[in-house]
Amino acid sequence: MKLETLRAVLMQKPAAIEEVPFGPEVLVFKVKGKMFALVPWEDPAPSISLKCDPDEAMFLRDIYPAVIPGYHLNKRHWNTVTLDDTVPEQELLRMIDDSYRLVIKGLNKADREEL
Image 1 (cartoon, one colour):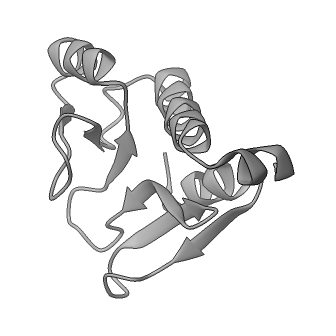
Image 2: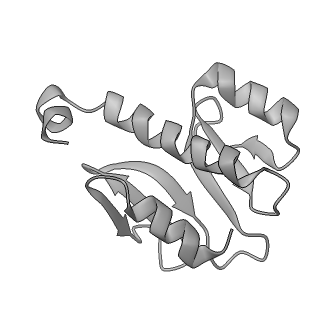
């Protein structure tokens, strides 16, 4: 998936914003101040880091060699997916949806209701 397509998918999520708090080389996508995706767009091997249920995170790592524990993140709750087309696009989109849902689930009640 190309960067512009990926950005469009991430920005379609309700209340999603894009920031660069770690410098211009990493795009961070947040909802209500909480990260749900990180894209180090200047890396030679494009990737995306996504929040994930711990059991599912292990399962995905076993299935797809392109899915590894979250780079510079909590390895139990985050996966990094190399965007080399070995993970089917529909599966990647599902992972993005799950990451967003997990972050929404962790928001306070008022923020969840606002969405």
